[in-house]
Image 1: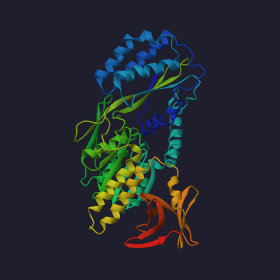
Image 2: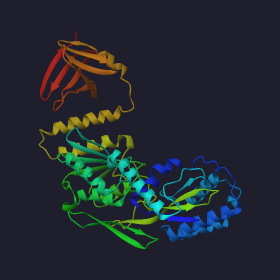
Image 3: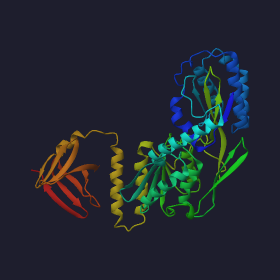
Image 4: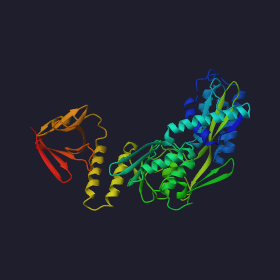
Amino acid sequence: MIKKYFTAWLLITLFTGSLRAQEFSTAANSNTVLSKKQITAIITTVGEVFKENYVSEDKANEVVDYLLENKKKYFKMTGEALMKQLENDIQGIINDGHFRLTYFGVSSNFNWISDSDDKDGNEDLERMKKEQAIMDARANYGIKELKILEGNVGYMNLASFNHSLEEAKPTIAAAFNFLASADALIIDMRENGGGQPEYVNHVMSYFFEKDNVLISSIYVRNSDKLTEYKSLPQSELAAQKRLNTKLYVLTSPKSGSGGEAFPYHLQSFEKCTVVGETSLGAANGFTPVLLNLGPEVGHLVVSVPDMLITDARTKSNWEKVGVKPDVEIDEAQALDEAHKLALSHLSTLVSETDRTYYDNLIKKIAYKQQTATTSEINPEYEKYVGTYDIRRILIEDGQLKFQRGDGPKFELSPIGEELFELDIELTPKPNIQFVLENGVVKGLNLIRGENVTFSKKE
């Protein structure tokens, strides 16, 4: 059997992304029962991979012993069934979020790396690099969304670190420049499944004042190599560091690997507040190992966790336990919760008079959270429809709207009891407060700052 160890960021990217979709592909011979000799060879080789590479030597030996002692249970299995059973059994021993077996049957179009000669292999690798570069650019190097939330709170959805850092640097800098004037920042890791530690460290460095602070280290067992990751100086970053900006990081059970490293290390160094749900708990990095199982079986990629990551402060990591939020809340409401926390913090930095602006925004978000389960317009809103002097309230396209005379129509968003916000480009936005007597709408107050205009319902 031919073994190839993939260590380049490109190949790790492929085996954590596009190749995963082809796992247990519908190959012509994937349901063919393998011989005892083939199965024994596969089990032995998988055991060797673990013995040489797995981050815990004791667990690696346990895997090897189990496979050899129980090899008879795998006899008379098809290729696909064998791979599934092996993955389940090994996972039962190590319970590691980064371990997986990816099987490519005989008829799979497996042509990423040639097994025949180096020239073909190099050509395949160059082709993959070009294809991956296109994919990375289309993914905007992991930065999925940028926006300024109300109250001048910046938001960045950083969905992946799985891209070439050198190619990503201009986009990272552009993102931080876009958010340069934000008074607080929220970085969303809820969809981030991980990626390159260099990328993670680069972004974290924007929040470290001192240079060359040891943040983490990664030990690779097979090579006996230790790599330290330290905070970068301003000269290596193309945008200004955010040293005095309150930072909130969102997490979910889908946050994994590098998507956990980012909040874990920043939380450890007291650089952020983590909001959301406990993350996946997959800390040990991995190297994909390609096994050529022969012309009658196909190929197998063993994603074997061989890298031990250690936080410089905790002297530990998040393996199996995940990153614990400072503020625990359902992931679907994590952004709103972090937004409220940011506004609450910002309100402490202004005068008591100006604090009303932030308080009103917080009330609005809180009301939105309370009514988040309602997607259809509330039938109670029908009672508001009508003419109020020169103003009109109507329902159009499933939205409650406000109109003055023959002017444009603006959506009304509920922010409290009988209280709505007028969606118009003003700061602060005007509010509409409906006035009721015995449940019947008698009029409305148009509230603009400290000015209130009453309109009676006709």
